[in-house]
Every structure is written in C-alpha cells, then in structure tokens.
Image (cartoon, rainbow, N blue to C red):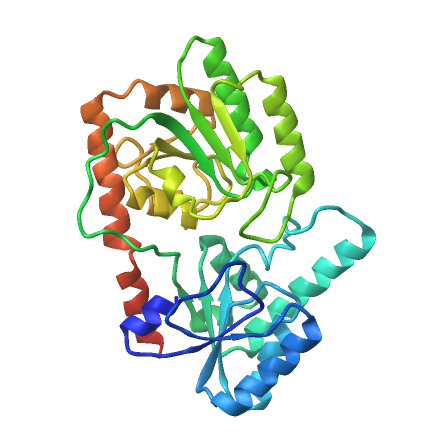
Length: 346
C-alpha cells in the first residue's frame, strides 16, 4: 500500500504497533506500541500534529471503531479497509475457545459493522466482503470499492527449469485452508508410488517469525496427521519464516486448497514467480485462475487427483502454465493496479 501511495506522489505517515525486524523502509513511520492505551494516545497525537485529510484504517483489532470515531470527531475523512474475516466473526486469530472469547468476537464484529457505517469509503480486499456488506445495508455498497491484494512483479518472466521440489504450501495452517486434506493427499500419492518433494510452511505451533500466533490447535492436529503419514523423506514442515519467497522459487507448484482464494497474497506472490497454483474452487477463484491455463482447479475437491495431474505434466505443458500464471498476476494484480485504484479514490 505504501509503495503504491509513493508511486502516485502521496507521502503518508504510517502508524505501526511494532516491527519484528529493523525497519529501513522509506516511509514516515511512527511506532505506536503494543499497549492499547499507548496506541490510542499516539493516534490522537498524530492526528493533531500531522493533520491528515483522511486516514486509512487498516486494522484488525477491536480498536478499529475507536480510530474511526476519533477521526470523525476531528473531521478527518475515513477510508476503512476490510482485510479478512472481520465481518464473519473470525476465530482464526485465537488459540482457544471460551464463552468470553465468543462474546469478544461478537463485539468486535459489531464494532466493525458500525465502523463501516461511519466511514467515508470502504475498501474491500476479498469477494465475500461485498456479500457481507450488502447483508448489513445495501446502501453501503455505494461507498465500497473492491481492491484486491497486489504484489510486486518483475518486468520479465524467468524460465523455470531445474526446479528441485514439487509442491509448497505457504500460508497460515488454519482450518479454512484445508491443510489436513493436502497432507492426506500427499500420503495417498506416496502409497500409489508417486515420487515427490513437498514443503508446508505456516505451522504456528512450530514457530512464527512474522505474525501473531493463531490456530495452534488445528496446527497441532495437522502435524499429528503428518507424523502418522510417514512422509519424513518427502515433506518438510516448518512455521512462519521471513523471506518465504526464497523457498517458494525452489518449488514448481503452489498449493492452496482453501475456502477463500481471492486474493490470497502468498498465492499471487507465488504466481508472480511462475509457480503453477493448485487450488480448490474457493470464493473468487475464477478471477485469478483458469483451470488448465494458468493453474489446476480441483473442482471435485479431489486434491490427490489434482496433484497427480500436476506431476504428470510435460515440461512444455508446465512452462506454458507457468508463463500464464506470471502474466495473469502482472496484468491484473501488480502494484500498478493498486496505484491507479488508490489514485481514483483520492
């Protein structure tokens, strides 16, 4: 987002809670701290001193409504970003369930819905957001813009030959992404005599260098399935790691058997490197992937069959699909697309 703003001549001030690594980015960054009260105070102070025309509320916490209300009181225009399942009582960011947490999630969802009503513009990053917004109030659609994830894309496609590994999953290991199905499909592949190498990244219960830990219960269940599948020689399992792109490019196929496809950032990033995606027909998939052209869609949710199809591709068939995957992201999901859409909203 910040790169896109800089590309159109806007120099925003960025409020971050913290940064896990040393930040050398060319942005005007203010660290608000992890304590909620400190973040609240820092936000008010920044609005008074910086005096922005508008704020981009890109926040997934219960404080979103606070930011919106304060901006409204100070007559600052609000652009509210929907970035995940915040309208669907999303529980994936929690590692346990309880009555208190269920109430907390309901309150957070209610706050998000109210934030939409108070905002001047809503930016929806996923297709299901539009359905949720319409269910709240159809009039809200009039101030909503769809702006899917975009990624940096190199100017030229790089031929992908001599790739050592086959499949990579690189996302949070959560239930809605059906990672257990992937492990079970790999197990069946091995039993059927197929040779392959695969990697699964995103197990919160192993490590997390990037995001807050979430969904540890499901992560552990998938690890147990993996251990029982006897895939030690075929599959590498790890947590979230920095610079995942360095691992992506070692693989031929990017696997995402998820309920929601549009527009998963890791999926777009992988396609920008020429990895061929293998997906379930999840929400919004048709806007990114055409089966047999720039990826493989398991329409019958038979992931094993889709993986077999991938392994049986000839070199020329793979290269053609790889190039098409790159071209799709470059034409429809590059940072230039974000820049033009952001410019149109100013």
